[in-house]
Image 1: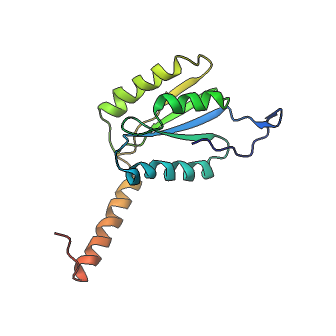
Image 2: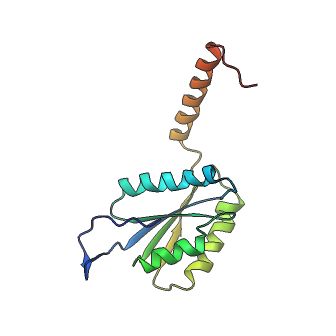
Amino acid sequence: MHREVRADARDKGRLLLKRAILLVDHGSRRAAANAVIEAVAREVAQRRPDCSVHFAHMELAPPSIVDAVRACAEAGAEELIIHPYFLSVGNHSEADIPRLVREACAAFPQLRARVSAPLGPHSKLVEIVLERIAESETSLANGEDDA
């Protein structure tokens, strides 16, 4: 997903965004699961209008990391921050995604890339967990049961 947003620099009427953000999830065969990263990317784009924001799936669904890195480079990005949208450190966030990004970036030597840490552990995630538990406690108190 490429989102053109306001920026001070213009080149022949085209917005120049030197930094891009690429959110990467695992990918799924379920469209509803894949839509989550797109929604998160839209929210990030609203909060970071200084960057072009893209998303990719590591496997199973388009767009691929290769396609998203190409879109970032073609949009004029010189810096790329890749965020693995995973809850914890693991093989995908520590090895697979960095390898796929290196391979994709090889075609774009002007593009400097950095992979961030995945989501957790983080105190804000703990807040969300507690919120979800409270919702379930309320449901149980109201006689609702999923089991």
